[in-house]
Image 1 (spheres, rainbow over the protein chains, first blue to last red):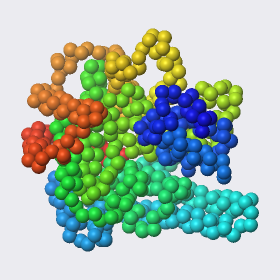
Image 2 (image 1 turned 120 degrees about the horizontal axis):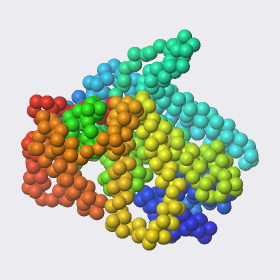
Image 3 (image 1 turned 90 degrees about the horizontal axis):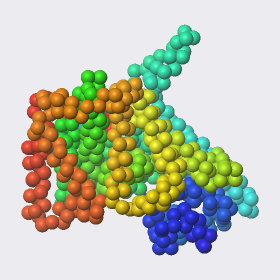
Image 4 (image 1 turned 45 degrees about the vertical axis):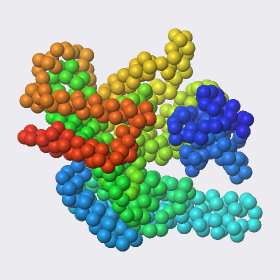
Amino acid sequence: MEQLLEILQDIDDSVDYETETKLIDDHILDSFGIITLIGEIEETFDIEVDAAEMTPENFNSAKAMWSMIQRLQEN
Amino acid sequence: MAIHTNLYLLVFLPLVMLIYQLVPRNKRWGVLLSASYVLYFSFSRFLVLLLMATSAFTWKIALWMDDLGAQSAQKQKECADRKQKSEVKKDFQKKRVKVLRLGVLVLLGILFYVNYYNFVAQNVNVFLGALGAKLPMARVLFPMGISFYTLEAVGYMADVYWERYPAEKHLGKVALFLSFFPQIMEGPIARFPDTAEALFSGAPIQMANINEGLLRILWGLSKKMVVSDRLTLLTNLIFGNYKNYHGSFIIMAAITYTIQLYMEFSGSIDIVIGSGKIFGVTIPENFNQPFSAQSAAEFWRRWHMSLGNWFKNYVFYPMTVSPMVKNWSKKARKKYGKYWSMVGTSAMALFPVWVATGVWHGAGWKYLFYGMYYFVILLLGVALEPLKEKRNKKLGIDPNASWFKTLRILKTWVIIFTGELFFNAKTLTAGFEMFFSIFGNFHISSIWKYWPDDLLTTGDVYAIVGGCIIVWIVGFLKEHGWDARKKILESATPARWSILFTLVFALLLFGAYGTGYQPVDLIYAGF
């Protein structure tokens, strides 16, 4: 989780990722931020994020992203 | 029978409401579906059969993918080890993707044929002509709303493929989702979970929903009839005879067309959303104060939102995570660094989105140019972001300062007006001629000198300006957390009815009627 928070801080350090739950719905993280994020988390956590995972529910909060990462690591 | 006509508002809609309320709850979806087909028949006659066939095809394709998914799960249970399981899963996934491709290709194939066959044939013939060959032109009938319901159907199939929700077993539910009568002409493009459940539930019509729906419809009609219909005459005159007008008129035409389009399209969407609300269906919003946007990217998150969301969900993100783009992105990160990898990936994901957005609006080079125009602007926005941050730091600019935000909004307006100038020009060449005439022949005084008094009187100008100011104030207040519509609906009954009657009177008094005025067709219904 620490590593994920670091990646997110790198993209935009003005957001409190531990409490924010509407990163996508409120456009805090835009489409281009997502592009950077996908590249980073795939490399850091050695996972493959495919199109089926690209839903707001998976990216609205750091917690949701972390659950997705863990799920993809198990597969 | 378009949704802004008296026939729809005063006869069709009340009649559907009455029949809907009279039949038993479990049959009400049938009333909505029949009404949708009747309305569709009024436009496109027997092409309603194509809409029905598309619905059945979409329903079947989704069920087929679900069935393969279930078979896959069953087979996986019977597997002895993980490796075998994974192979079975892969096999079935390949079958599912083939079914999805079939579905998407058939639907997009029909859309392509209807919209673009003649355009492509015309352009190909330029080359074939040299060889003495020729592609025949086709007499194509245009099925109303095909650009909208096709995207809904493709989105539904893709979501089922990605297992975001299961395929719907009831054909009627899928058919109603694709053809619900207020939405069929101009959208918004909904996703299955947005509307299907509410459409099918047959919930009784409630007074609160009628109030909300009626207010929304009246608001939309006012935008359309007071402002948009008036501006149509002026914009048509200048765009149609642009060679006779000075540069300042061209700027004015670009601005008035943008206002006309916004008032017309968002007004129609208000009527759509209001009509849906009456039956307890919450149709997704399509506009969110687009002229408050501080960048072109933000503008597209606020303008025709359902189209933007569709392209984001079904083209942009799938492109971003496609193996081809990801492989390139990984290599580029190592070779050129994070920044260039991000810019390149954005370009690869944005390009198909904006080619598709351009041509979705119609067949013509101007639409393709319109798409490419935004592709370049959005990509520049991404690429220049670090430079902008540096500039702000160096010059000590606070990006949240009001003056800076206002400047950014004005810059965005220039981008929007220029885009709409090309969008509405007769051809791409006409668009360029109009654009360059601004710089070569600009005299602001000519607006007063050559003002077409016979088209727009001083009274008309007051009605347009007044209408725009009211819409702007309502939008501004909403942007700052004060929703006028909500406040009206929460107010006491006498106050609420006074406002509703005021809107009706305003429509009767200030709506564009009389000789010379024609109720203007819905612009987006032609796409």
